[in-house]
Length: 598
Image (cartoon, rainbow, N blue to C red; front, side, top):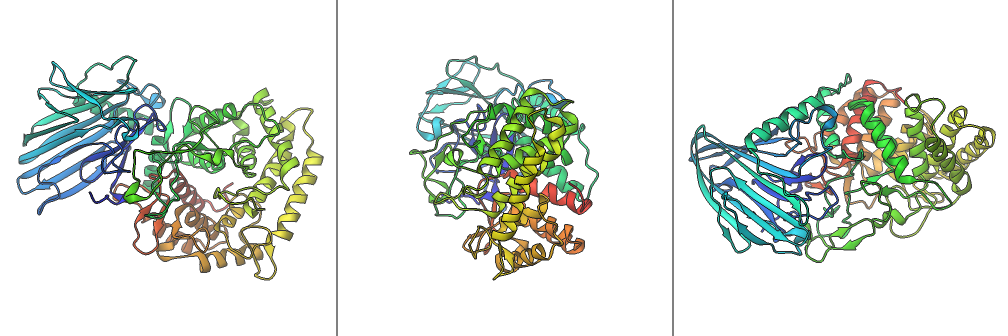
């Protein structure tokens, strides 16, 4: 099997879990219990990893064409297949709870995958191929034919029940393969319902009616959100993706719904992104604030504060599980060969063990943004968190760390990390009136000023005339584009202007793409959107807008952005859809709307 391009996949979400469906009609990734739970379909990472394909028999042959789009303001996907026999639409969704509206989206999602087939013209022969492989393909299930015509797949901790009203399906050892015809005007609804092996099974439902209700749930949610800036269509689509990446029960936003899609095909930089990163916290909060509403931003903050708990001497982890789990230790998955042979496939992410000095700055900055919503005085837990983070930065800012790219070699004094330490101290000084008697703004201001002086002295290369990635290093790192975004230096500062120009000149590529460093094999979309923000803040609005449109143009046909883009082929790389890329788009669009925005 030739692996489909990453850009072939569309994203389905019920704000509990995520699925990826390809242009060929195959659901190749689904972790039904929650985003970071074991996959039951994983053909995304191995041709034998399990899938559910529903497409015309003629798919892939001469005369077959595909057009697809999300239903407006939803993550419900409609794919139209045109064949020599006629045309048919397949509409896919992860079901919302029946009757859920507005901010109820995702709170009690039933873990049901819906697929509705509608004949548009002619008579089209369709093929269904259902081949589940629970536990990341470690298990081959038993298939049991049911009295109502459905089939139940049973293995290990998972059960999957496939049904179509009025159609009897037949199991063949480890799969269900069924060919049927659809006439013009005919509608058939299919569903696969997940249940834990020893839990309650969801009742059979009407997939067509449930799909209609799911569309209404999404639209009722989106009706509560408004955006009044530039590029409203792009921002609205990206914000819908970000809502889809939200685990509604806790408010955590996953970095991506996938694991181990490679930064370079055939390489080994393949990581599990199905967790929520504190290091991206302020960026995420800002994007939700701009394009969603304060409710989502506040719930994300509450999740983070609870996840951190009381702060001691140990560094606060850079990431947590979706319900606040701290230990998300990494292991390799033996049952999957990796996307296009890009091994290993990793489950878990050992970056949680790293020292990341930028985490407190992200969190304290988020408190500053939410200060008017946190009450007066701040509650005990918020106050203790800010005090603990601030004192931790005061005691440890001088130490090296792994940097925002989470390198797995040695610790260094990364410039961006130190700048975020400055952010933590600067915002803590401003928040001091809310923090009670233990606040020490005079001492904190002294630490803040010392950090700033150190970064300006050690992080700026006089020889090169630019900020480099780490103290004493001559090498550029696009992470320094974050300095103006967080307010460490204005983009108009001559040192910053020279750095921006050098990054664009030395790390830039085709299509407005920016690499993180000079040996990075691909353009990193977040860095490209940071460059847009820097140019806008520097007064180059027209050039920033042109760059924004170039970078946003790397989305696939349904508006999804992965983490990176191949500089030669333009192919999407890395886990998808990538929250940071969509966050970067939203924040850059708002910066173009208001260059002085905080």
